Image (cartoon, rainbow, N blue to C red; front, side, top):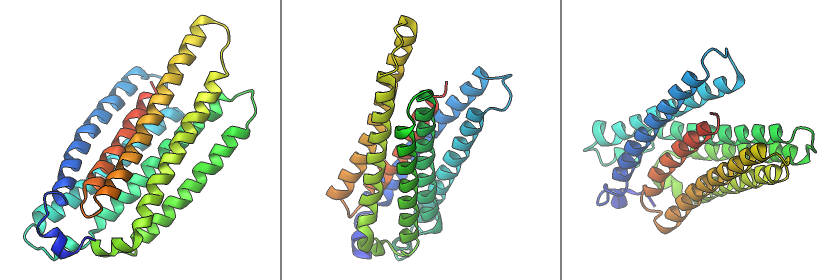
Length: 255
């Protein structure tokens, strides 16, 4: 799939696609930094809280994810730009950015499950517990896929594990839909009869649905691009952006 003959005439839609994805990811990271600054300015004087720690965690994961992406691009397009054989090898930072992509995804899912648990106070915990189990299973899937990736040393090795990409993206999409649906259900059945409170609930429902749809569309779009064009890295460039969008939209819900 990613052998030397395929890479040599198509640098533009392989490593060029990664470069464009990394550039846009850096732009989104800048937006995330602005959000974090606004969050701490808005919540100054409140001491150390759970959500402040969550924001710091997201910033660290997001920053390291971008750092590994940048190193990956530097390795292929600067350090070994004229070494075609080196372009067929998977550099260590490429594998690490996949790990941090998975960590960001699972952290976002865990945050939304925490919200689901919060809005279900005084009600049955069956749905929140079920979603906790599903997110834990998704984490197990990601760990397995990362282990499979670490068995690959050349891009041509990825032909044997195409199923891993579909499994990862499919799992993310399913979990996104289930979490968004669960939150929507709990919020839709939480109307109090007070117009101000119900208005807030309705706005939060719209935000929840929009966020779930955006994340699901991103995962599905990446999967479609991979299915249509498996011999290039366009889907990886899009994957960079999906991870950054997940962080950005998650932080918006903390204000």
